[in-house]
Each structure stands twice: as C-alpha cells, then as structure tokens.
Image 1 (cartoon, rainbow, N blue to C red):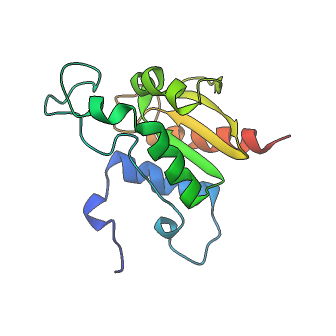
Image 2 (image 1 turned 30 degrees about the vertical axis):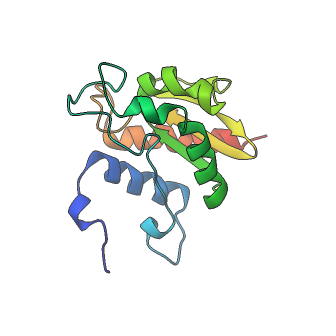
Length: 154
C-alpha cells in the first residue's frame, strides 16, 4: 500500500498527525504513518446527535468505566515515549481524573495539560477539527511540538 491515508487526505486530524509526527520524528527510514499510532478514548461513538458526548443518551455511558483500562492497556502494549491526546476540554473535565491524569500541569491555550507519567510525555489538547480561532494549523502543531520538547528538558 503506497499511501494508506489517501482517503483521509486533508482532514484536520490526519494533517495535524503528519505535521506533528514529522516534527517530532523527522528522520525515519519508514513513512511517518509507520511511526505513529492512534486510538479513540471512547472506541464507540456516543450517539447520533453530533453534540457533546456528555449531553443526552449515548454509547459513551456504558464505556466510561472501561476507558481507563482500555487506555492504559493500549499504552502498555504500544509502549510509546509520547502520548498526544486530541480530545478537548470536555473530555479533559470528564475523563482526566479517571485516567489518572488530573495532576498534569495546565498548559496555555490551545493546549490543555501536559506532563510526565511513568516516563512518558503526555500532552492533552483540543481535537484539530474543533473551531480554534486565532491559530493556524501549522501554529497548532508547533505548539504541540514545543510542549513535548519542553517536557523532555530536565
């Protein structure tokens, strides 16, 4: 497969993913998408109302208690050095504590929080599809990369 993401070309998520991965891991013998993994905090959609998962009925409720185990099992199996959570403030407010991440330092907008957990750098920010006025896609990626660089410093 030459380019497995061809059908995703131009989407805010995949554009940010590529830009950020190439900035963090510029030298690679493999394509960027071979050095990058992603997963949903809530693997099942939350409903068909296209609103916050915390409003109304949806599939998020039966998943909620399983999210921490799912998240940390995924992290354990992939063993990443960096974790970028693109989930927004609503997800932060509802799930950071359950994931054991509520103690991460709050970061300046458009980032939400970041820090080290078990030797891994974690940055939590908004999904790139969110309406983030006042910052370009490139600027958003640069802020994420800068935050990861700062977390590596002693």
